[in-house]
Amino acid sequence: MNDKNIVRLLGWNIQMGFRALLKEYKEPIYWHIRRITVDSEDAKDATQETFIRIFRSFSQYDRSRPFKAWLYRIATNEAIRVVEKRHQTVDIEGNAEAMSMLADEYVDFTDIEATLLQKAILSLPRKQQLTFNLRYYDEISFDEIAQITDSTPDSAKANWHNAKVKVSKYLKEHNG
Image (cartoon, rainbow, N blue to C red; front, side, top):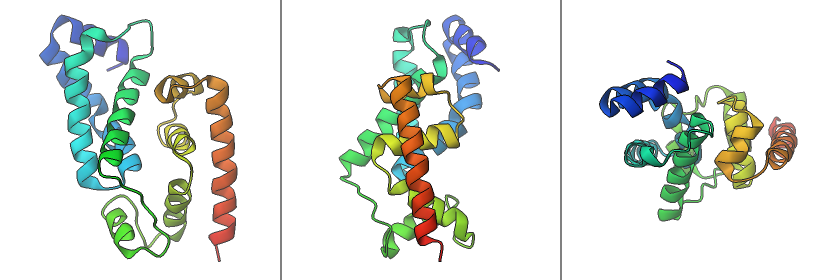
């Protein structure tokens, strides 16, 4: 179901619309949050809170703006709130505990390239990390990334470019 139909359904019958919303976005929103929080339990909590916030604030949604960007902005803010609340910094270089946090279904540690890519992404500054994840994994447009990260499309493009350069450099330096 496309976003316009979900928005119409939410406006017409909130329960039916919310079921359609969950069917379409529960998994992508969870993985977006998971890439920010790293920890699966934090991601589950933040995902649940995200959908509660969406449900409670739907009447405030500005229909002139992309629905997907609105959803991802709420999810991003909630994930960041969880990370900051826990004062979580993930230093995965030589940190077995941080590596084990990533170990369940998030990263297959037998796949060296995937592991290095995740380490490279986690080494980026937050805005670059968000932009990289939104563009690379979720294939979100620069206009929508700008709305999600409270920036401009040009800034989103610059963050994407800088993130790609840093990820590439990290992979070259650590791919022994």
